[in-house]
Image (cartoon, rainbow, N blue to C red; front, side, top):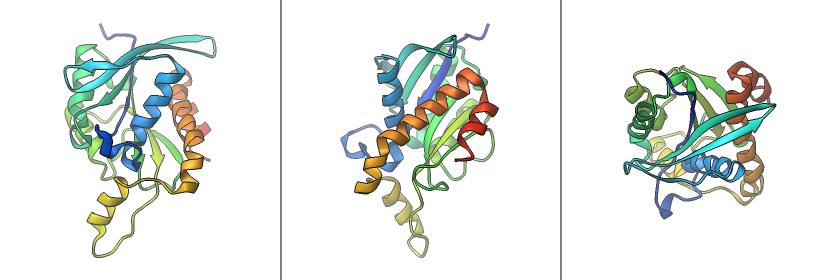
Length: 199
């Protein structure tokens, strides 16, 4: 019997040196949700910080787990699949929040399935779950410079911080990301796509 819980996983890298970097947008968004719904996170098998909450929106009450994988981005799937298996949460009830270089800073796209788009965290989750049928909230961080050092530029970019202007916009952007995850759970994916993808 699949559980009636949802799982929201915000992706990032653990440790002080990654705090506030573009690649940790998922963590930051998870923090917003944790604060919003009074979820306290504790250790799950050394793989993730995990907490349980209830969101009460639009006349509905939905139980959910909130996770921040501690496996580093490239092994995010180990944490997500462990929680999913342990609590019997199907892929259709999983929402993954992550940074996306294909979108400009401030843009949000909601989707389910589709390609990992070069995102190692998503590749890892696809592999570990054996499916890509979960929902994703993609938070735009803009793109690094292309060219001869494209790979290094990309690594430095995603592990880099935000401009002062972006830092000003960040709280609102992260709140929108949290709203998008809630909308998927409460109103369904297509409603969330209508609401956020056209912005």
